[in-house]
Image (cartoon, rainbow, N blue to C red; front, side):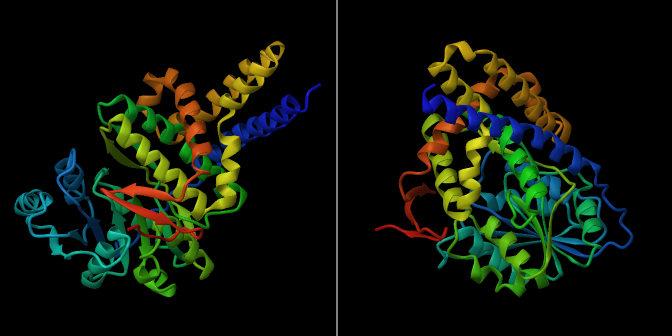
Length: 376
């Protein structure tokens, strides 16, 4: 028997075990009940903005409509002509009881412009509990109430919100959303079981100001592309508890063409490889279908393994997308899961090559430790 099929079979066995662990991890996550809110601590919501992107008004409106007695909204834009400003001003006029402020930051001196915006808003924020949320996030009115209840645990320093990706109209946007909703969160849930939450991910993170300042604040994060991951890692190293919140947000990823989506995927892969090298290597086990297809190409008589693999992958995808996220997209477009898995596997391989990324029209060089800097 040739060596390569045997090695692929061993890796595939590990991938099937990972699928089973994903189902268990999803069950474990759902078994943890969110506490009741006893006292509503004041919250500052920090929203960095850059342009009037798709569905911006609806996304921001969901934060103005929070069912919470004491919170403020802070928005940051780079310049006074940013197209997001009229949207914010219109909502401020409509929701006058909500304390909302707009900050014009000027050109960022940090490599990570988002971190600079957050740093400027932190200086203006009045409250201890901070919720940092991207402009493409949409929530229901109970979001702040749920997160604040979790932070009644004084040991909790940071909580990262899982997210359900909602795509735009483009095919590649739909395909990526299915990947996020069936694969990405599965990896987070498994990591939560295996090693605990020692990192943060995603477009909405809640943090206690004391935890943020304990590792040097945003100034410590300014050179990192994956500032969310590093933030959770540093908070954990300072002894704070880091958790995966019980609140699932909606991440509106918008419509993307082929080129834009490919650049985004490659940027994500290269960034992940540097911010979490061991975890990136472990992603080999997160796509069992491509592994099974490679194996069957070498040994067609082993075709029953492909059927078994499809079953395990379907169970893992259902546990994450259906059970945890209540995602209607995957239920309707389930047949895209194998296609997305193959695309994801290709970009995982591609992520091992190259050390530059394109972001907001500029080229950056990625260092081995996850920091980045403009090139040229």
